Image (cartoon, rainbow, N blue to C red; front, side, top):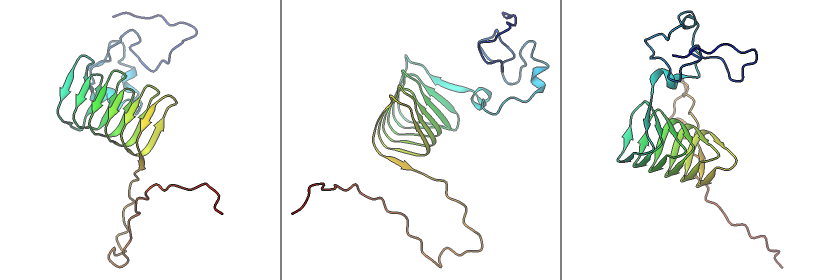
Length: 185
């Protein structure tokens, strides 16, 4: 649509080959002038652009459960559980229910449990509920009320070792205890 001439000092990263286009091309159609660039492999950090990102826009409200293996960005309001592959709750997004995804990024509001392999709370996030994650990142300014449980991937059990020979007790959840700091006579 528009072609941008190259300036001597670029101010933005240049991995895009369609510098003037705001909408990325469809995966099966090459963009104009990108025939040579398509031979180079794309970075693995952009799986969302390749599969497509479904978006619930800010003027929509949804009641019910959402499930699937795709990617979802919520800018509107959902009352119900959400279970998807990757989830982004935008700054205007709100979820009232449990959230589960491999990757969860919260910029808006979630009232309910959050479960994911990788969970990020950005500075504008508001989360009221327990978080279970392998990796958790909370930016300064994010609001979080609840418990954090670190879930880990279980290593595959050795094939030769019988499991019934030695019972292994699962770690018990320890209840918080109050500590009396007053000196006793």
